[in-house]
Length: 306
Ligand SMILES: [Zn+2]
Image (tube, rainbow, N blue to C red; front, top):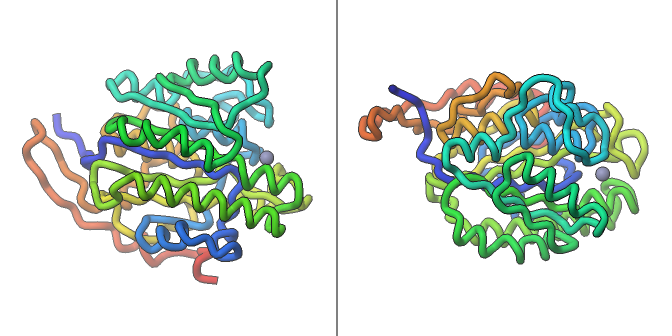
């Protein structure tokens, strides 16, 4: 059967928790500033409601909106879904693709539930080690060198932590954003972004400081607006537009790896970012398709233009 798929084998998903898109310019973040023009990106994507980590990460890793996956607060728990959900790592595993996750260490009493959640989601490997992005990357680099297929997820707490302590966009927050950016630089150095087989996705789970300087759970745009970047040899640099949702990320990852989308996935693949999509028949016939130029300039409210 014919199916359209980019030649992507591996997706590296980096989630800088609570990184506002405007922190890239305000913090003069060198890695992200360098990546932006090389990536398909938007600085005005929207997260799910409520804009909190447990809820957003559950959507990022299941493709389902909060009403469906059932995690609607900021408490990590085993989801009680309404309707079928198809966790992304489980979906990949069904197609013989491995998934691994690298996140900050959790308090001792939380470890069993954290590992159980990772198991339910279908991660073959979940390492909850290190206090910040730099330490988490230390643990992830050997895996990035070894895992050539499937999904590697990195979640970094630095900016969210500083935002709750000192306020979003405070000096401490921007320092944390720079630490995240430096960690991202090490991940980028470990990848070959000219290689069409690797896709790097950078997406925050929420913003912050919308109404209360140290919180991010309101419906204010500063809380709900997130940066989304896609980079790699199969990606055409472009602005993705103002209507990108966090839910489009899991749909894009599954699509990029050639996996048919389950009905439970509420987002749509950002397939226009991959202009050289190949139609594979018995893995031989290759047909290049043109990019969709209307997406490149028809952008309203793009932060990078302000
Ligand atoms: Zn938070």
